[in-house]
Length: 144
Image (cartoon, one colour):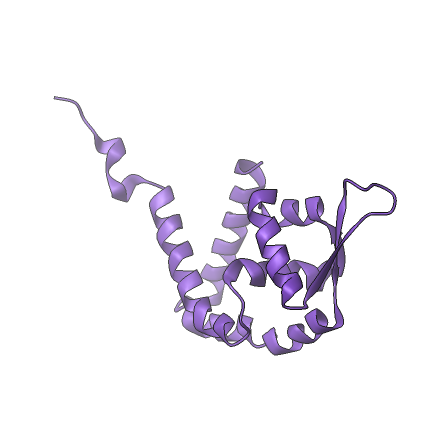
């Protein structure tokens, strides 16, 4: 009889990552609902607050999103007045994303979210820092 130990749910790396990701996004939801943002729109805005202006390609790389996922997010954020999308004057194939004054103001409204999320996760700071470091290590080495 074959041994299927490798197929046990508890032995999978993907399962706890999936559950934790889903739960973290669920905890973000009420905070983001106040800003009328989805989680993907929120992380897009965080990248924009940090960089102010990026090409769509650069933004996709930062967020690990392909253009099929990113394009509708950017269109929605543009309709809400938070970003502008314009073709590059140097290269018409390149789409430049810029933060608007309204998008900049949204940063003030979102500033409380990281602290509020910190209160939702019942882990000590050292464990959270270790988890953060390990997840970034995984991203940097495994997701290319």
